[in-house]
Structures are given as C-alpha cells and as structure tokens.
Length: 239
Image (tube, rainbow, N blue to C red):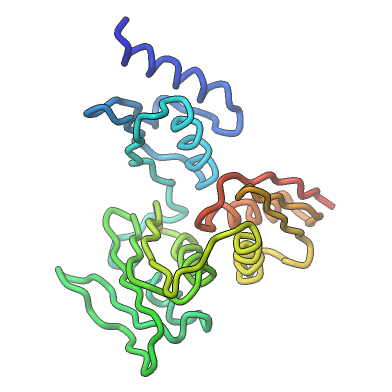
C-alpha cells in the first residue's frame, strides 16, 4: 500500500465515523492531485460541506485542500437566472444600497446599479451554479450579509465570497455573532427572537426554542452561510 493510498483510506474512515457528515462515497470523490488533497462532488447542505472539508483538512494537514465540493441546489436553475436573482437580492437589501453592482453577462460585466456616492462595489459572476462575489464593501457585516443573500438563491451550489473590506477591520467573535443575528433577522422563515447566538473562537452556538424541526434546521444553515464561521453547535429545542 502506497503512502497516498493509505492516506485516502484513513480520510475515508474519519469521514465515515462522523455521523454529522453522513459520508456518501457514491457522491464524493477524494483524490490526491499534485500533492494537494482534492474533494469533489455534491452534498445536501452547506453544513455537511463545511464539516467534511474541515475534517478532511485536519486529516491531511499540512497538504492543501482543493475544494470542488458543492451543495445540491434547492432548485435547478440556469446560471443566468441565478445571477439575476442574486442581483435582485443585493439590490433589494438596504444595507447594500450604497454599493455599485455589476453582473457578468455574455463575456463582460454589465453595470446594474451605480450609486451616486458609492462606498463599495460588488461584482457578481455565476458559473455552473457557483456564485462568486468580488469587489469591496465597507464592513465585515456587509461582506457576510452579501454572501448569505447569495446562498439563499435556490439555484446556488456554492458561494465564493471574495469581497474585500475597506477600511480593513479586525475580525472577532463579536463580529461573527452580530452577522449571524443579522442573517437570522433577514430570514423570513426564522423568528430571531426565539434564537440566542453566542460565538467563541469562531464556533457559533445557537440556543432557544422554535416550533418546528425545519425552523431549527434553517437557523443552523443560516449560521453556516456566514463567512468565517468554523463550526455551529445547534442546541435549539423544539417547543
């Protein structure tokens, strides 16, 4: 058995052992490519994606991870439709009203909104259901909110949040907590008054009580959508 074959075996065993991941070898490909560890395939939720990548990274360190793992979309959509919905979501968000917006279409970026006194700019590109956000915004909260809005589009398979922040801000647990609370407040299917959010070392803990299991699950997924969250501990109870 070669070193690489043994490494692949150990990673598979580690992923199978984590019941929160529900590792399905039929839909996930693990491989070693030019010294890096490749993870490819499709999973049901963003929480599974993040947990699987974190577990794989810990098992293969210090090898780099190539992330080609996507989330099964809630609804199959063409890239053009996904881009239009992300554009509309960002346009409708008051917190991003002072951002210039451009959407990649037919081989170039088209201006879709030019704020008179713009303090930020967001470029939207969609390829094979993967949404990429580039540009610059004024605050980590806005960066995180834009990413969550892109994740909420039913056809999104992944969101690459490449937005810069100017002026630069030092990230911390309080920033993450505020962002998760904001995303919960924006979600029409979650009552934020029923959920308490705390963060320690980028690990978000959700407490409280909601009426349905789906509400509990949606609150957790919202937390995972927030850029910079390392893990989510869901202690929400069902009333």
